[in-house]
Image (cartoon, rainbow, N blue to C red):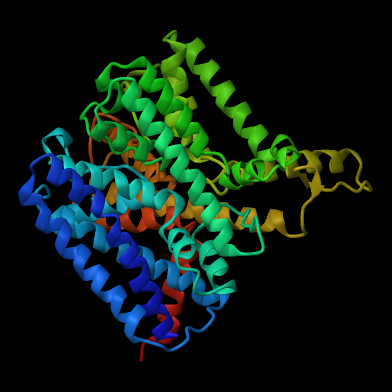
Length: 476
């Protein structure tokens, strides 16, 4: 099994290393010759390791079991984040490896919490890499590896299940590799469209790529200190709003549409709830604040999708507006999307169960089934959802205590915990949208990295990884 893990790890590293070609190209075009080595050296190492296992080792990999799949994915994500931090650290833009690692974890988990106060001073190749990590993490580095190198069959599906967000984890086709390819085909197509529109509406090619990556990955890193709002381009703001919302919808629904299954999208309970939340929250913000409807829609899309872009400082909004946005921190996007948070499908399940319980009080001998997408759900789904939300809230509480112990005030500690676990990025208080995470102590940064990874991998993956480590190395 160790061999199989190493083989998968080197393949994923090789694919991730190939993604450094884009910042290398930008560095060459922009005349940033001093940035070539920080990208080329880790890329060459990643390719070398992958080549060793691809060309020299002939042993057939073993099929990974369900429990081991969670451990493998947890290890993969930790290693990929370490790999992503290397060019950031050696770029000289980050004062410590802790800061570079925080930025990398924040990037790959699509959180978008930065330690930098002035991103415009960075080399453009570094900004591209920061935003590209969002794009890779949004769909999932394991899903990309399975799409390009279908090694494991059923084992590959188990890996994707361990990485994919939300409880809805089904294959579109009989082949997991084909499903992964369809998802990435759509993801790439949407990113190209977003890049073209942002370029067409006034951004240069680097800024357009950065914000397309961040919008589709629902990350939030920007190449400007003032984020999207600094461009003063209403059409670009609408474009980002559109693609943040599109990236928050279950990507499997898009693939269903591409394959002619139109009815599934229209009867999808989660999609209907998502659209209702978007419309209701946008109207509420518009009516309360009296600002433009564009600004209301942008802020709702930014927080609900857990992207964290900004066009203004929402901490200056009226208290009622801030409560609306704070509620969206806990909601998140749809299952199987690039967005973070609890996921709307889980809240939909609990809401429907609440209605059933109300009916049961009135009709104690009635039989009430829980139906999602027009069909009854399997037994135990409510227990599964409730257990996840318990773990989610528990992690938020632990993270809030850690923040308070590190010296953060009450509002900052609690909202920061919601933001880290939900992969949102900005929070309230000292971690508002115009602030950054550079001032927090290093121990808290490392804890926040764990919280971001746990939130992206839906908590169980890291718990099972650490549990396996404890069982394999018990204390004497």
